Length: 204
Ligand code: GAR
Image 1 (cartoon, rainbow, N blue to C red):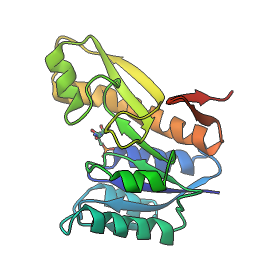
Image 2: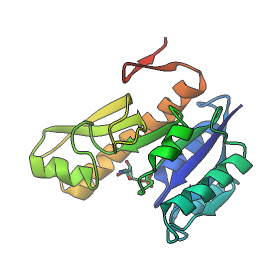
Image 3: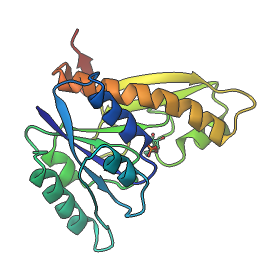
Image 4: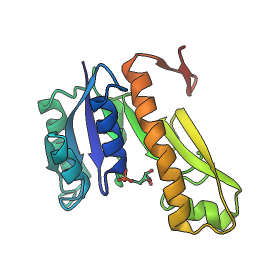
């Protein structure tokens, strides 16, 4: 069974989508073992509780090295091991160190609310609106030290309408996030993702 750890900072709707997909059997051979939040007030902690998944919050006040040590211990003690587990960033708003990323090499995924490499960083939906693009979407990718730059697993596109504001575009993209992330996890759990030359090859 693939052991999954999910790192969150906020609302937790992507976490919810993944937990639902495990529960209803569309992701097989995997279990979410632990949820780690960078914010003790995150709604995502309640989502974890609803599904009976252990959840902890890890403060970054003492610095990133200390926090990442705690995250690592939480993951490992729940069986999400560097050689065999999978770490999902789901609205996790901290940047992981390259040491942490190297430990879970090719076993950390992130979801980002734009069609990368367009609009990396914060408030991607607002960046898209400000730039006047006609299409945006979401990207699930493997995490590398450079932020929002890793090998792309899945993208889903949505139209951008003249009447959109940040909220309406974010909501349209979010509906696609909730389809894309569980699908990416499913492909990983089925052993169908391989990274070749910074690109992800999906096996049939
Ligand atoms: C999602 O839109 C996700 O793509 C975005 O934060 C939101 C989290 O929502 N992530 C980033 O912007 C990462 N830089 P959620 O907590 O409801 O899943």
